[in-house]
Length: 311
Image (spheres, rainbow, N blue to C red):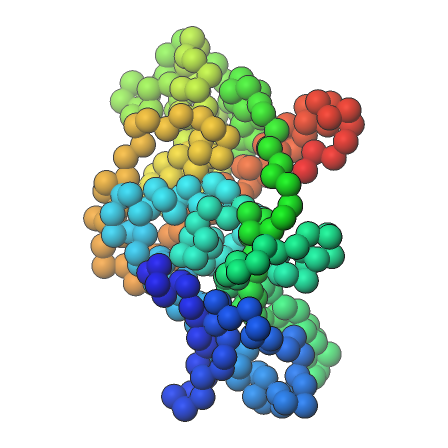
């Protein structure tokens, strides 16, 4: 997969290969039809680019479920790029798994940031809205070449630091149901020893006396489970478990006992479409909770920076 991710040639027919390779920095793709690119040829080219990107995402989806280690590495990538779609997360994982913030060369230049020499761009997909002939609006996706901020001369920016207590508080505020402290859980058979989502009562119980990191690990799983249930996702146990791990990775909470060894069995015999439908709720849950937690933590970030921008 690494070799495939280094070079991506888009082909619309067996006889015509467009020179659009990730390692070729001289390749220029017009953003609109030109004299050299008729509307028909331009549309065919864009379709070929888009199809190749989706095929790469499908290969990545098939790869990450082959063993628990690959799946965990994918979640590590997700913890850094949850703002991007599930398809783009797969593309980023396949090509630049440590990426955090991506722009085209031109967009970086608008911020007075230059791409370092000899850096290789990689592909993601971008939604493009358009107007149909009847006046209604539609949208499609185009492949786009980008560079990560690590490939530029931008100065690294450290993310805000938060205590685990503050993270737990933000997570409680982000819960779709009420969180209550209890001496012991109402369900003695609950697999999670310090928190339990009770859908009948519409609450998440948290055991008193646990350390903050244990609470975050347990609570993030139950909050994710409640969110998935409200989103209509049935049997969301694995998705909640994966979302919990991803949130821990995102916020620097230790993850010593997360085990994804059952992933190959769980995803066995699922085709690419089914895999992506299973991965999307994980990304959506992480993105929603991370956004909500960011809003809860934002006043602290502004205060620490004297009222400046938090992000």
